[in-house]
Amino acid sequence: MLNTRTAAGGHTEPAEASPESGIVWVYRFAADGAGAQLPSGSVDQALASADGWTWVHLSLADTRCRAWISHNARLSDLARELLLGPEEHMRMDLLGNEIVGVVPDLQQEIAHATDSIVRLRFVMTDRVIVSARRTPLHSVETVRRGIEAGKRFLTPVSFLDAVIDQFADAVGRMAEELGNELDNIEDRVMHGGFADERPRVGRVRLQAVRVHRHLAQLRAMFHRVEHRMSSDNAPVAQAIRALAQKLDAIDHEVGSLHDRARLLIDEVAAKMIEITNRRLFTLSILTACFLPPTLVTGFFGMNTKDMLFQNTDGGTWLALGVALAASAVSYWALHRMRAF
Image 1 (spheres, rainbow, N blue to C red):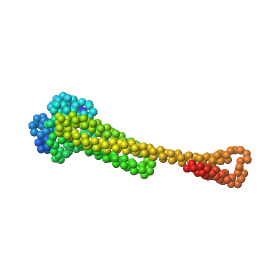
Image 2: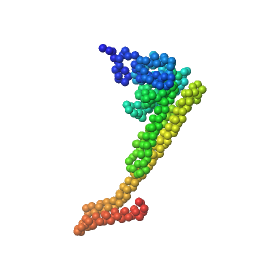
Image 3: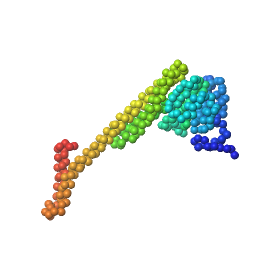
Image 4: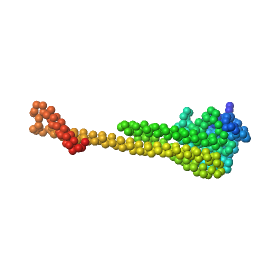
């Protein structure tokens, strides 16, 4: 019987499986930029080829991929440490002929992206890009589908540019959805809706804050890297400059959403306070109007001798009339004093 072991994530896999069998994707790009998927076992031949360039995508949840990075990947020790390490902070550094980095991406579910922002790690040279992730990523999956549909990437730089550009587009769509949510809430608030919209606005504001935090870090990193690489690697610096400009525009939109959400929370809170005050005012007027009748009923409820209307036909109705008259006088007095 074949010996088996349990890998990360709970999968039972053959213990004799080679490290290359744990690679998620291997794509080989020809000189014209056309990409073709290769079997994971052909990764060494693809990396040794003198034509075009190669993309190797790894899942860090698979111990076989970790073994391939540690022993088989043609990378520097610092690049291996970045791919295998626990670091979550965004970074991009130039290490000799390698560009290493940790950038954000949206987690991919079966058919759509989620709001969770996770990390993509990569090591790039002029001939190879090795990317790694712990969970499926939306931008990487979108770019891969583009490759299958015939999209061409002449260099690893253009591929990485497409991945980050897809992330920026996804964040832009997310910002548009958040803006539509705020528009709907504003319409209900301005039309006098009585529902407390603060939890919904709070969720929008929280998501805007999270996205803004990641975009601000990514923008700052790109601006630093652009100046650092402008003399060493002009094509990469130019691509980073274009992405930084796009992220600046998206971050400005997300920042405006955060400001709108903060102002809308104040507006909703003011509306709720106004509604509460109106209800308390109505309750106060009713209390003031019913206080004199309560006094009248309390007076006629005393078990004392010579009580008014005690021996009078229809005395109960007369007492009721006195109570109503007292209430009417109270209402007239409050209105005369401009209490409402």
